[in-house]
Amino acid sequence: MVKAVIFDMDGLMFDTERLASDAWIGVGKRHGLPITERIMNRMKGLKLEDCICVFQEELGQEFDYWAFRGERTEYINNWIREHGVPVKPGLKELLAWLEGHGYQIALATSTHSKKASHYLELAGVSSYFHYRVFGDMVENGKPDPEIFLLAAEKMQTPPGECLVLEDSYAGVEAGWRAGCQVIMVPDSLPPTEREESRIAACVETLHEVIPWLEQVNQGK
Image (cartoon, rainbow, N blue to C red; front, side, top):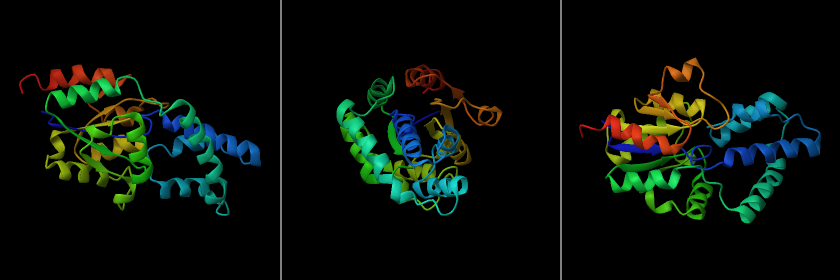
């Protein structure tokens, strides 16, 4: 039985990981840095501090993340200012359905609190998330299970009765290690055999989470 649903944010709720990748690759082109899609994929689901480590592993310890972050942020902010936060298909319908059926809803994102809260407000979904865990609230980032365990604790719900919705490999691993049920909604990377062994289902969009829950909880 599932009583609570825990949402990842970037790549799952919002198509912001694509924006970030495009921004960083653009920074690389302007400055002659080999920032590639492969490097971006390594960072999916990770905390900021871990992303910086990936950059330094790939580009050298002398890579100054903060010297280039401003250009990346400017690109993303300008895009969102013009187009709004890019919401993934089915998000608002799923949130409304969950609320209407009495599920607890939580956010567990590696993104820091100020930025994540701003995105929730811009997208018009902030009111659904009474329980929130941000990247700056945990010591260990995904794939460590800490963020999902804390979300379950806040909801006072056993991890086994929580459904984690994730798009990244690190997030799937974290949800599985927390003892939660996990559905993967792939963003840019399909599940490998490793993810397939850890998830309850893989769906194309958030629309498909509703019939899965109806089937699992039909005896609720």
